[in-house]
Length: 70
Length: 451
Image: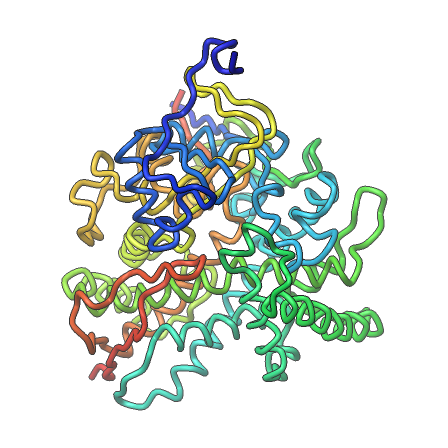
């Protein structure tokens, strides 16, 4: 079982909490629209990052991040 | 032949009781949260009412609310619906700016609320609460709505405009701010440019406020190497696509807009949280136990330490469900909408009611009962039913700030003091006389230091 990280970009306002929690997996950059938004750097992060990724998902003010198992 | 008939679409059902000239204005003015619930009860998912000539379609239920909240500005315009804010925020600011400039201004506003600044804000709020509580003594009685209006004005000014401004805050500033507030009453949503003393006072206050803020900006430009970590710093450093900075007028406008979005919404919710803590002793005991376990050893209240306080969070979420500070959200329809076979024509206003949605018994059984143990919004439907901060691309950008501030306040207060109602429990009710919901006056509570 590996973690798969997805984001619902329509809901992202660039609060950057994920970047603070887990910079290995998330970055926040200006989108084409000019807004800062999340990008996923590692779609399948290793188990050692699980706790940090889960915190990022949990504390995201807009619940943008989903963790799936595949 | 009407447009609807030509396209084979229905028109939204109309709410009864319309009067010539004013439409439903009277019923709306008595208690608009109730009026909107009655509209839904009579007509269902879509209900069209008339606000002195402006046809407005109330969209109810998770599906319709999702469609509303996911609407982008070019189709469902916030700017056209919120023109009353223009003389308050200023010309060329946010809802009066061309679309591209408005987008950049809002982006800069969100920038000020991002992770990096939030840590500073958490420290500022903890200090403001400490200073306030230091004056309390062992026991006493206060009007907590008045107290929280004062406290959140201090935190807002401190986080937005810096420590210097906050500690030199004058009565003049408070008066100007008050004059601006009075400029945003219901009549302003009909016509904000009527010849009226309140609107003259509003315009005078807006001009003078810009002089004051320009003074701070000039002082900061002259000391460019100093760091402040507040919102003004973010506003001053933000740029448009062509590299140009915001003007003093635009910065002043963003300061005012941020104050207006965050101040009374926070003070009203904080006051309601205090009332419910006094009124719901069983849930309060759980919250207290959690706070004692988490912070009992004198751990500081910081952005990190406040991230996870589940019982307090659930309590605040229930306060926001029953008492959502912004009851009515509006957009102007720019292009005709076909909503599941019903035509909502361009030029009409669409609206959603957080208050009504949060009392839908399908998603919130026994909705008038305060229950801090309600299930989390774990389904998509429930997510669009529970909307204290709106949702979608235009969701309240201050939601993380607001929750952090509320958690900080009560994580500091509750372990130190016990709260009691002064008046009969049922006498604390929602006051909807202003645009932002708050507890009715007086909002008296007694407090006693815990041993």
